[in-house]
Length: 198
Image (cartoon, rainbow, N blue to C red; front, top):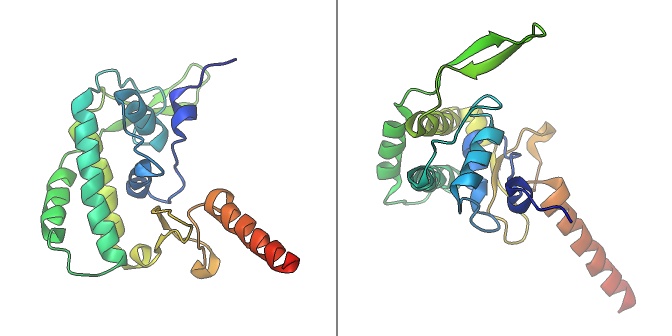
């Protein structure tokens, strides 16, 4: 029997429509950032860095920083969806603005042996730069009225995932048709079958 890899075991999701929203999804259905290895996997798969970028220098302080940013972005995004008196909203906004000031990693194009161009970084990315890139994504989302209008919370039972609805007519109801949408369809079928039997 093959051993599960970190990505298999943690089922990281990248379907929310924005990298900052994919960061928020790392809390559902349970905490995903429970090790530096999982964080490295998330950074690599999120597109924050080019494929095969070395991340061995990431340490537990990165987990703390990414979790902090995730909490701040969550406050701002949920505050945009459900405007209500959020006493800590302005504090979160100021902190995300500060984090966003860090320069993101500078990619460069490098020619492979076969002649194709690929993205690479001049040097291994620092935590502050990666956090800055995610924070900038959140600020761009929240300051773009068209994109912000597409923010939705999943209507699935007990699913807190926030996603960007880019569907035609903006009628998408679930974070994933295959996950929450399928659960809802199965539940509806069972309810109809139970009513038919009754």
